Structures are given as C-alpha cells and as structure tokens.
Image (cartoon, one colour):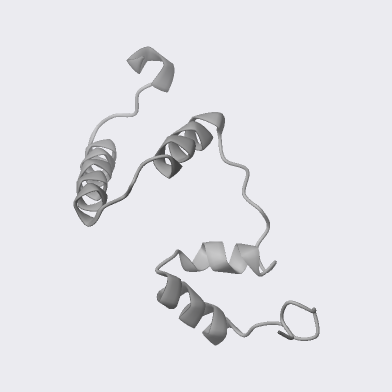
Amino acid sequence: SQWINDRRTPTPESLDRIADALAVDLHEVYRHAGLYAPVKDAPEVQAVLGALRRVRLTPERVRTLRAVLESWASYDRTSPAKDAASES
C-alpha cells in the first residue's frame, strides 16, 4: 500500500471510512495515521483499559459498560467535584 510505504497520506475521508468499517474512534485512527500526537493516559486509565482488554466484550457487556459509564458521566456533570483520593 502507498500509505504503508509513506508514498501517500490517507485523506480524512479515507480515515473516516476506516474508522466506520472497524467501528473504532475516529481520533484513534488519526493517531495511528500519525496525524494526532500520541496520548499518554493516566495510570488509572491504563489499568482500566488493560482490564478491559482481558475480557470478552459481548454485545450485552458493551451495553452494560456503556450504561454504567453514561450514568457516572451524568452524575459527575450534576454533582460537585470531589477529590478522587477521598473516594477510595
């Protein structure tokens, strides 16, 4: 491929189609294409992502995870900020 051999840069439209076809975040595709700088996640995020990669994500589990995360996000938007260390 001309992309792989650095003879051609993928267009934003191509990257969008790749993200759709793989059902992944468009920003992640841009990162892998070298158009966005790599992101260094906090250790807590790395730990959660590592655990997530070790489980079989069935459609039901994905729905459950999304519901939990959306619930937490909704709570965080409407509640006063707390120190994360005091919640442990």
